[in-house]
Each structure stands twice: as structure tokens, then as C-alpha cells.
Image 1 (cartoon, rainbow, N blue to C red):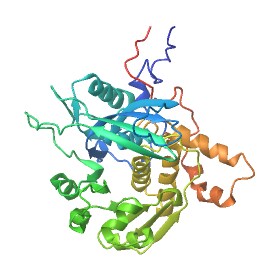
Image 2: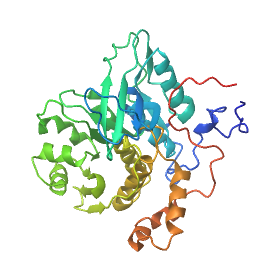
Image 3: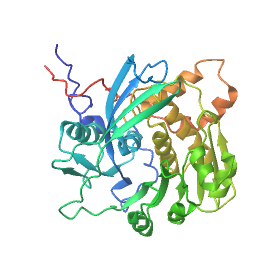
Image 4: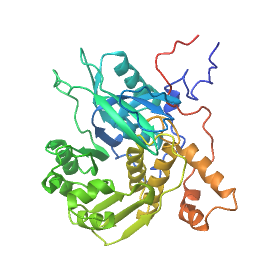
Length: 378
């Protein structure tokens, strides 16, 4: 069977470099010749994600469960990097890649498939790629991961972080990240996320670096544990004393934000969708919020857009390759306006999209997660 070849420059499997061209540049109105080449820099661990969906319940010990769906894609920090790139931001990623087939696939998918700058990244000989197996069921997921910390580089790394409009930092309890302070001193706007504290300490001292950040975007459980509160909104208000902008995601209840500089607050309800795989939805939310912030949108619009991108992502397999682009967002907006039973409040909330969305369609579809990798083409 022959694989159809798209016209040159239109993107797709036969032309991965062409697939990187964004349909819309959300920062076109604010760009100047003096701007850095990079819009967003981020660093972290890239995993090979294997996702099982269509499970009716959690696997039971001593039994075998069959999933109705399966997908493979780059994961970990690749989730956010891909989401940023698909929204038209010039994204630079510093990560270690194994020299195995998984690492080769992840590198190709990110660099050629998504147009992400991997100049700060490196391939580590003899180091195998970290792997996560994610099982989605009952609207949530359970993950099992394996990997080893990459050895330090043998040669000096390229300038890290490079000059960039913004950086996204994943805070790790007990692990200082000096690069965040360097980036902030250079003028980059730092947006911080945080992972689960496996130590159970949830020490507020681990958030000291927030004084160098512009925004902090934890989920409700993380925010409440760090602030010793029992309400996501109270947690956001407490965090706004540590960082200029606190954004707390609340799952099916939406998201709430407090601007500690102005006292402005915003709350946006979640969009109800049928979730196939929630892997990486939080990363896509952050990418959507960063896009709106760099474009200069009002706080409530940023929050709504972030929630929309996250909602669209859970309707596809995989954390990174489930991220929507502008064409998918435009298709959603056209769809919701075509039905009379849509909430007037929803239509008003997203009316700002009329002045943002592209008129052109993508000539070739986005890459999505496949059950396996390494298919040979005829």
C-alpha cells in the first residue's frame, strides 16, 4: 500500500519539516527585530509514553486486562513543548535523549514533526530512554514509569537558558534549579509548574524560587497542600503572596486565578467533553495560558483559552500528540456556534476567539499517537 505524499511544504508524514509551519503566529502583533529567536525555553525529562485507553476499570491483581485502545508518543516535558509549538510559539527544549529506538523516535517527532529547537538537547550514548505506561479509565489515569537519571554531559552544553521571551519551569521539591534565576535576570518571564511531592513534606520553602517567577500554575491538590488550606480559591489567594500571578486548576470545576499585583481575580468553568485520555492535559493548560500571556490577553481570556486547549487535548490519545493546534481550536469554535442549544454564557466567554482564529485550514493533519512506532513505509 502506497502512502500518499502531500505537496512539498505542506507537512505530514512524508514532509515532517513542512509540518512544523504554524497556521497562526499569536505573537505577530508584538514581535520586533530586537526580540530573541526563542519564545519559550523549557527543560526536563522526555519519556516514551505508552497509553492504554478503553479500560472499564483499574487492572486487578492476578488478572489480565485488555485495552480497547493504545497509543505511543513522546511524553514528560515533551507534552508541554509540543503544545507550545502547536500554538505557534518558537519553542526550545533542553533534554537528554537515549540513543535507543525510543530516543530516536522522540527526537524525530519533536524536532522534525513539531519544529521544536533541540539545540540545547543531547543524545546520551548507552543510556536508555525513560518510559511511562499510562492506563486511562473512569476519567483518570494510572501511570507506571521507569528510567534512570541521565549522566552529566561530557562537553560544555550550549548556552542554557538561551535568551527567550519566557521560560516554563517544573519545580522539583528539594532540587534547586539555578537556571531559573539566570533566566529571570535576563528578562525572561518565568511560568512555574510543580510535580507531586513524593516525600509528602509539601514544604513551602521549596517554593522560594517563586519570587523570580511571574506565574505559578499548580493543580488544586498541590496548591492546598503547599498552603495548608482546604479550598482551591483560598490556596490561590495565599500563593498570590509569593508570586505575582497564582493560577489553580480545579479539574472539572475549571480554574481560578489571582493577580497579586492588582487584586484581580478570574474564574472560568471547565468545558465538558468526553475524555479519551487525560494524560498531559495539565501541560497543555499551561501552554495555552503562556500563549495568552505572551500575546497580552486579559486574565480571564488566558484562563478560558488554557481550559479550552486542555479540554480538546483529552479527546485524543497521548500527552504530547494530543495537543490541539489553531485549526482544531477554530473547528471547535465553529461547531459550538452552529448549535442553538449552546449556553449563551459559553458563547460570550469565547467570543474573543473571533479576533484571533485563522481563516485558513491546515493542508495536512497533525500527527497523533499510533499504537506502535517504526512502521516501514512502502
